[in-house]
Structures are given as C-alpha cells and as structure tokens.
Length: 216
Image (cartoon, rainbow, N blue to C red; front, side, top):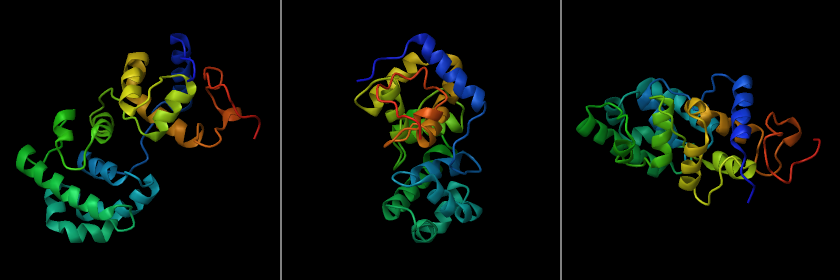
C-alpha cells in the first residue's frame, strides 16, 4: 500500500492539475442531463470514443425520455449495436425512460437515491450525473480514479466505495467539484495502468508511488 499523501501534498496536487486544466470536462458527449445519463449508462465496459460514435446520431432523434420510448428497444439497438452489452443496455434504457416519465415527469432527478432507483444506474453512474449535470461536489470512482488514488497515496481503499469515502474526506472542498474530471483524465492519459508516464507527470513530486517509471 502506498503511503498517504500529506494535506499539503494533496493541495499542491490539485493546484497543479488546476493550473494545467482550469475547467476540466468529461469526454462523453451529451446535449442535456438526460443524454448525459444515457451516455454514462452506455459507457459501462465501453470506451467514451465508441459511445460518442453511437450517440452522435442517436441523440439527434432521441434526446428526451419520451422520444427514446417512441424509438423503442429495437430502434435503440440499431444505434448502439457497436457497443458492448448493447442488448442489456437497451433494455435498461427503456426501463429507466419509462420510470423517468412515470415517476419524475420526464426530468432527471438531482439526488443519488432517486437516480439509483432507475434501471441500469448504480452509484458510479449516479455520481457522474450529479457532478457533471448538477455540479454537485461528488466523485464517481471508476477504474482510473481507483488506480490513481491508490497508486499515488491520494486515497487508499480496497473497494471503489472505500476510495470514494477517503477522497471526500481528504480532498479540500474547493477542489471537489472538478476533482472527478481531473483524476479521470490523469488516469486516462498520464497515470495509465501498465506503465505510468511518470517522467512527464505534472504531480510526480507529490505522488508517493514507490515504483515511478524512468525516462520514456
């Protein structure tokens, strides 16, 4: 287990990421909170690039729960059949759209419990929507954030929920709103799984990873 960063190191860690990218954004494309939710559901075990390619045309015809229901499950499958697990995802999307219409007036709820009541929506997906659509200071721990947190000493934990709780305790409040995006992007492009790009990492001085890679 990597030794934990100090409070001062965590502050510098986010100061540096903020200086490089003051307004970080997620890479899933969407036009409103509903399409964001659908994109996140589709992104499970799929790449953002692959999801964006499928949803580019889908969201032109179905950007509300009502329109998605009119499209129907078979119609939806024709747009998303390049995405892994598309049959199950199409079924869940139809179910969540029906529940949105029946229980929430077609609107995306802005609280975690309500979001998690939707078919195919777990804590991670709910947190992404709360953060990206409603600007809530929450963190969705995906594989990138789980790896970065444990590897650097930012937050140690054996499960995504453990890491999420540690991050919420350890990250200063002024960084929380954007922390999710900074950490995802850092894990996707710098602190990658097999061989992290430590020589070009902007936060290598704060990172406690004991096996930093040498020059590329």
